[in-house]
Length: 179
Image (cartoon, rainbow, N blue to C red; front, top):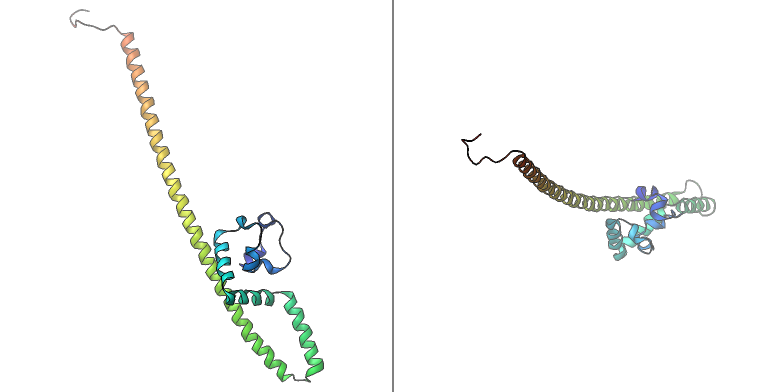
């Protein structure tokens, strides 16, 4: 979803937000242009907004994927290395390792969310496409039937007018023995 949302055209959403807050379901649902969103996007956002755990995971992944996260860590690491601990920074190494474990878990949560969202969207698109195909097939059959009926009527009219004009052109012979 992050890749797709980053490549949205401005005609779809009006203006593209400068922050990644549009990726969070609660903010996505509060937009005034909900009718422009894909139905499966809305369904997934409503499902994620209903769960506290998923809202927390979304908030963490939204922050961890931002430049503010990078700036904060640069500042914290610099302060830690200059003020709290001297080289080789064993406590800082432990903290960074633990943070990497948790962040990798949140990355996997995000990947699972993305896979689930893509599957829901693919299922919706498939069902919509199958419905349209069925509808188009029915319309094609109806057009074919109407065309066949029109063809039969035109053929009957042509045959009737041809036979009536042929009978009017030649006199009717009552007695076959008379010339």
